[in-house]
Length: 486
Image 1 (cartoon, rainbow, N blue to C red):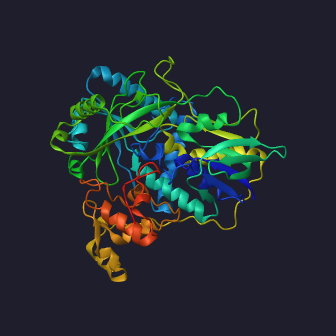
Image 2 (image 1 turned 30 degrees about the vertical axis):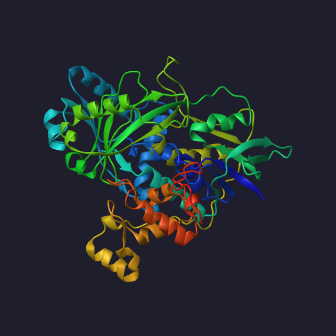
């Protein structure tokens, strides 16, 4: 088979493009090297849908940020993904920092942001009584989602609309053949053919482009470290709270972000590293995260931390480049026709994803190919009901239909056996502990899986006949059990 479009990378950008492409009469292929979608940048960020005032006026980042944000209420409803309009404060400690807030405000207005205002300490205290600051830029349009749940939903909906999705298929070579089709080589000795290739490889998008031609784009990995606070922190914070961004910095500063699940995130840091796979947490950085968080919200000193983690941004510059801004690269290669690159898609990439997907289909692919809408497109996708957020009568109704809703597997997050089974039997057929975690929030509570991992492992063994030594946390190098003998 020759596919019309092959997308490399199943993060939020790749899956957004896959879903958008599935609206048209195309044969679409989505390839991902990991054992699940959303295993890279798309699972390890703050989950914030930005208003668009932090990015340079006239840039693709500004255009797609503001446009993309407007799509989310509808898309999240279609895909059954939780969405919360949490709002945001960017806090200034003194009059000197107020100058920077005013610059952000003007930039936001130029970018087309809605719902922005600068407020004083009295209004800050009315909105967030525990937050310390003299002034703040108040954004009424900032929202939050679960970025990995959103990515999973996009992939599942694309699959339901005919997109072929192959996980655990790493692209090792790309050959432009004489018939102008691409031959895409896979680590398993297989190959696929496609008329168009879209490089949505995230951190490795520069390497994927190098499989086709020489180029001057380089991804510089910039690690952001985070703390996750217990859900008890939610009584102190309702909206996202950011400091004034550091001048010439690589990020937006250490901020406090509520999550859909009820936790609070502290972070991220911004440190350039050499290894794109180095997701370490470091004591020095973690200490700084605590200090800066406590400056913004002192009451957090009373709240326990339940986990720390890291994510990596795909920067197009580093701390030695002498610049502090690079725009998204979204373009067809000038040398290799029908090879489309998306490189350096960092923040606000999550917010921009739906708009980027629309642009790629309508403005790049649509320029040289006929876009014929399908007669039937399955708009809606149903997610896994989380009993933790249901009323008692709703749980009783589900239990009467399926007794597995009465058995708790994860005590911390109140995840039932029915939810675990739905995750185990997910449409993408991903069977790692991480895949179950991202779909149910099991293993995300105070004990971090200490209670539920053995029970989930038993379900995998009984339901899918997976032997314990083949149960992986995330990839095939992350065995959970060793020394098993049948």
